[in-house]
Image (cartoon, rainbow, N blue to C red):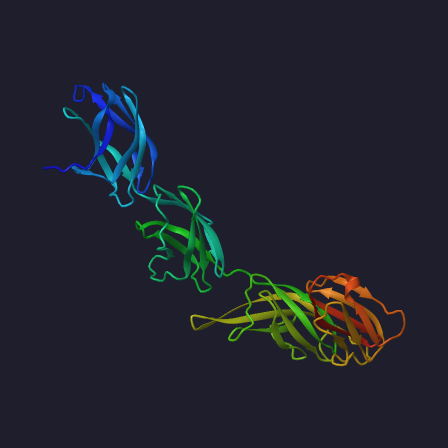
Length: 411
């Protein structure tokens, strides 16, 4: 005996079972998880009126309560409207629709279809190794929450960790979801398939991983020095995430333009990470260093899952070695700038008469230029009058014998 699970309607369908009576549903399909969507039933040869009747959905002859109808309204003899809801685990496929009263039954075979969910598209369709991208996933016939078990994989590979979809997933509308995708540095380049395990539905070859993002050196300050000088320079990079904490570290070197080998007469002796995108370096230029342009390169080392990894970048024609004046260059240690950090004023002491004082920001922009009114080996630089914002700067002290540049923090 068939067990009927049904929704009761407060309506009457006069003359059900009379020859020529038919019904149709609009829309005649739905999807898992949809809630309170408008629908209508249109009759032919019917006389819909108020009373108690039953609308039943059947799969292979068995009724189901996975589809429910609410807010039913009789519009006229041949039209009723309401809202339809569908549970998220209902089987996919076609369903018969029956309208019955105590005397008659109208059956619409395969009158309603539960559509298969699918992934329509994703945006963007590609990303570089080492990037995190914001992705929009467009689905069809899909209304329930996006599964946490969603991932990318390459055909024939069991590694699902190189391109990871992370929470939170944000619903934009009924069909579009926003999520984050993290592409590992070691992810293989090529096509990846997207899979949502809620229903194990996929979009093949949906996403392309390309080479690692460029992490170039974007700025060097200062970018020149004379033979025989030792100075500190600040190097700014793009798309980096430097961390100043062992086992993380950074190394750098200078090579003559067009050469693949480091010149021993121009050396970077020490480096120090100062932010996610910048690091300082101490450059020693020996008196016999070749003149001209030099390339600067760096390598950043870090550990991930107990594996040492690295990335780096290069800037060509980045640094210039200029001729010595033939006079002994300024002694870096003999020139003092204090206090450091400073807020209102700094004192500059030198063994030579100070001719000019220049202040540069980390991009190389000149922020101030002062010339002492008389010969002096000590100069008080008033930072308040200069109205320089807080940050990292370089003070260049020029004397008859040469110049020296030192970093200072203004706070």
